[in-house]
Length: 131
Image (tube, rainbow, N blue to C red):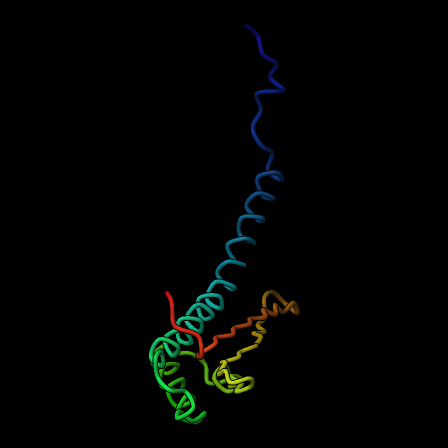
């Protein structure tokens, strides 16, 4: 069986270069964005840890400063930024206690291109803790 030599040729230099550039772009994006998502996973774990430690306690006797103190210690252990900690709000409306955290992270990607990531967490401390 004869096949055309035109069909048997490999990828050209430009085609191979394009594949390599796309691969490097994807790897670069993952390496720059990944750590910020890992930090957000740690933030969520920290907030859930606070919820677990306060489960079953009378929240009316625990002050906001005590909750923020626990958060501060947990954030330090997890090596999280103090800027994130400052944005935690404690909402005590309707007889419930909620931890609210809305924050964004901005970092340079390439040249003058920045990436902005928005994160949102809400933990209702009044509800029973469940994993």
